[in-house]
Length: 201
Image (tube, rainbow, N blue to C red; front, side, top):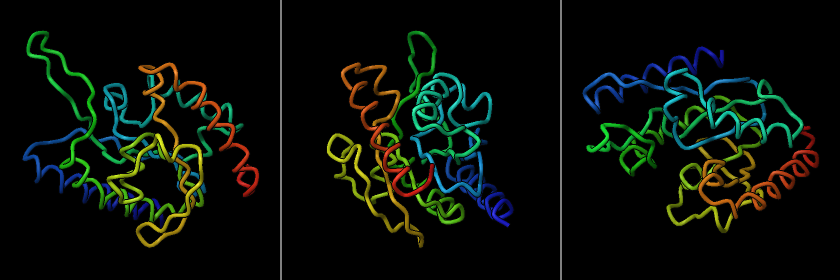
């Protein structure tokens, strides 16, 4: 039942995006255990995710390994998705190369309805958001910042469902700011303790 509902909204979202952008879009939909009580929400897929059609593979997958190892769970225990299901890119005219960029307001706006439906179907107890984009989207608050809210559980009502949101820094931010590494690891241990408290592990 859940799978059919997810498949249906996936196809509707694909159609909506192709009508909006007037071209075929390579999409990376959520994946994992659709009965999981734990959902991981990232920002948007990167190049490797688009190539493999799965969220959090490549470098993002290596970051995910650290995440699940500290929590003592497996990838198969999670449902993993992104707010934006396509790769936002910037073009470098000098090199002719594409690189990842943060989704813009229009890309987030056109994706928000879908992530609401997706989480409503999965109906998790705990949502772990990575970075500012997922945090702002789920809280519906453009002023929310990960620098203030990271590492603390927040009770959330979102799209007809209720769950606890646990905001973390985006693992990619650690690559560019090593000073965040210790904070990120401390937050992961806080998350592990919280998951034990509510008997999710």
